[in-house]
Length: 96
Image 1: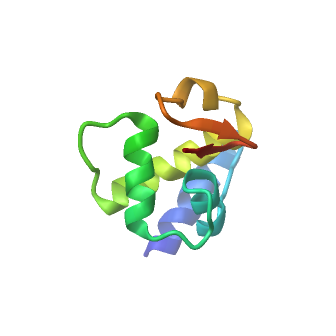
Image 2: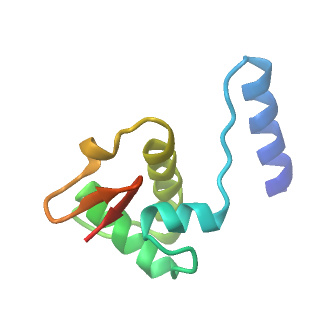
């Protein structure tokens, strides 16, 4: 079912001439945490830090936010707008 939903979403984007971007789990973890073998808890923690959230999102919500952050960092140069105090951006990745 998930594969069919993904395919339908991609088809809808393509039909409307909208760009499609896909990232592997490794790419998302590298962009958000700084290492590709990061645990889910590390991804959640960095999403909270990067977006200055008041609480920790559920794992699936944190995954979605991490993908959005990856896209913003890689394609739109939005890192400076997502940079709370204490974090620095180096080569498109947040670092302490």
